Structure formats: structure tokens, C-alpha cells
Length: 484
Ligand code: GLU
Image 1 (tube, helix red, strand yellow):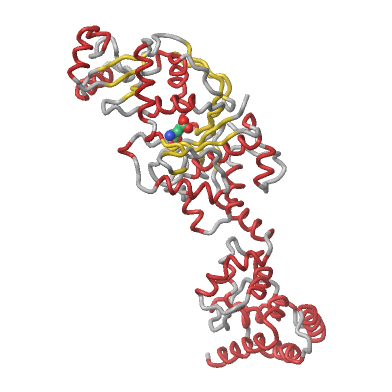
Image 2 (image 1 turned 135 degrees about the horizontal axis):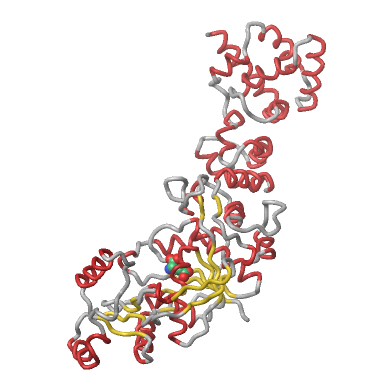
């Protein structure tokens, strides 16, 4: 079988991280099986349409490195499939079902439908269209139906769901599923405005686009029996289904905006690497081998297996994403990272060349999540330290610190070659001679030079700053302390 899959978002807002995971799993599956990955914009519901939402989806997919395989031309423009450009098809297909007797016209007003639901609720039964009593082709008869149609009375087309039949399908993630058709509503297929519902348009397109596997979020599982019945009504072979587990927050509740950003755009803006984000999102519900966490797109493709997707929800932990981002940061060429933050550095008023910036990246990349953090954490690498953390002064600067430290500072000043090794040797030798512990020397030096309690190795930091700047910083700090 030729593998053909689709990502079918509705342009109703931003792209949710769960949507990106669906897109990714479809993409990984298509690439693994040398199949096709289609993008279909399901924009039939004009009331929920949000301007710019499609562009937002396209941008996010592009950022993530997910390439779409088919871009049909409509009116001279290339782009994804859009259901709004295929309306006639759905109406024709609804007509096919009317003709073969698996769908019917219904003329109920919304008041009549509300009244039906209220009666059902009062009687303690689940609301469901009751075709034996409502105003439709069966209760009105053929003649009256034709008369209403010719008058142009408001109508919908509904699926004639079999009365009591087992609807079966196999889900690659959840196994065999059987639902009795009694539980399935006579779904509206074509609305009174002539627009198709999601169900009709989705099935018609999946069939016409030769979709082999429908891979989508678990929230669509309850719709699947309807879809299977629709395939039956058309006499078509249904695709294989795979429903992906929910995304959960740390408390194992459904992930929502209240717990974390759920819009992919927010993660793009925060500065995550696309490779890190793709890696992280891919492991929400599946892992290629289980023995590690970091995978390239190609490794994800090679290892992808729908049967190994978990049934239980996947916990979305941003700490893990942050860790991954840091790992990607450390594995990148420092010059590339430097180029990525050069504009930001200039914006912050730092006048530095790329080579120096790359050296600072190497110095500080172990300690940050985002490249741009290097510019704030390591501000002293670009501009003289003028502020010293008061809390850290209290901790690191004691009564005897100055007298203990000054001889070492003078030894630094006298160094010919201001390298990390030489600095290290001086500190060691001086500590041994004077009996002052290394920590009692290095903490005040860190304080004086960086103003902060955290940072990279001080020997490396000082070596990169060079003798002149290091000594300037130390002198400025001593002057500051004296002025207190
Ligand atoms: N338009 C639906 C959505 O927004 C598509 C669901 C499906 O993949 O069938 O997710």
C-alpha cells in the first residue's frame, strides 16, 4: 500500500503544540514509508475562521522543518489543499448518499430540535436525533419532502445511521474498537447553508486524496464510528486509523493555556531551536528506542513506529524542553550560535566581533538554555562591571578578604602571559604559600570581576577578558568597596 497521510488543521487560531505533534507524527510516518505528507486546511466552518491562522500554521510547519509534499494550484496560486475551494464536491457527495438511501433530508427548526433535546433530557436519555418523530423525509413522506425542497424550505442532510449494528475498526494505537450504532447520532452532513460539516468534508477528502492512514489526536476518536459508517454509506474502504494520546500537564490533567504556553508561536518567539522543539514534541507519546532522549529528524524518521505510540497521555514538561534546548546549544558550532545572537548583541550596545562572541559562547553555554541568555548572564564579557550583587558581597567579602587577596592580585598583574593555566598555577601556589583556601580567593575574585555569584570557570573568564580588563574590573570593585 502507498502511504499517504495528511495533517488537517482548522484555521481557528494559533497552532497548538498538540497539533504540531500530530503534524510531526504524520510527517515521520510518511518519510519512513517513502509516502506523501499532505496539508489540508479544513476551513469549512466560516464562523470559527480566524484571519492569519493558516499563515501561522504554515510558518510553524516551515520552522519545524516539516515539508509538505503536494501543493495544488488553485487560481494560479500554490498552497495547501483548502476545503473552502472544494465546496461543490461535498454537496455532490451528499447528493450521492441521498440517492443511494443512506442519507436523508430533515427540515426541523432549531426550536424543534431544542424541544426534542429537552424532552430527552427530562426522560433521562442521551440527546440524539430521533428520526421516527422529527420532521424529515421519513415522517413527512416523499411527496411532502419534494414539495418542501421545491419551495426552498431550510433543510439539512443527515446520515441515516443503521439502527443497531456493530461498527468496528482497528486503531493502530488503541487496538480493536467496537461501538454499537445505537450510540451514533444521525450526523448532519450538509448544513442548511449548504456547507458541509467537518465529518462529510473530512471523509470525502480523505477518500479522494487516497489517504491510507488517518493519524490524529485522541479527541477525534469518538467521531470515528461516524466516519466508518460514512465510508460504508459511500461503499468505500476506510483508511487505517491511529489516535494519538492527549497531552497532559505535570498534574496529569489535560494540558491547557493555564499551565503552559500551548501555542507553537510562543516557543518560536522564546528562541527555542526548532531541532530541540521537534525532538521534544516527537517524544510526547513515543520514543524510538527508549535508551536516550536526543534524536535528529532523520533518526526520528528511521525509528518511527505507530504501533509503539503510547495509549496513555503524555506529560508536557517544559524543564525537559529547556534541558534539550541547552543540549542542542552545546552541540552547535559556537560561531553559528554567535552569528545567531550578533544582532541582539549589537542591539544591547555591545561592540564585538564574531570570533570573540563565539569564545564567550563556549565559555558560558554550559550555563544557559537560550543563546541570548549568554548576553545577559555574561554582560561583563562585553561591558565593564559596575554593579556587584550586594548579597554576594556579604557572603564573599569578609574582613580579611582584602589583605588575603591583594598579594594574589599583584601576582596576576605581574603575569606575562595571562592564560587560564598560568592563572591557575598562581592561585594554587599562592594558596599553598599563604594557607588561604582556594575558595576564599576565587569567590571574591568572581565577585569583583563579574559582580555575580554564578558563571563559568574564573580562570577561563579572566583569560578571555585579558589582563587589562580583568585588572580594571578588580580595581573598580576595590574602589567601590572603599567608597562604602
Ligand atoms: N480539522 C480537524 C482538526 O482541526 C481534523 C481532524 C482530523 O484529522 O480528522 O483537527
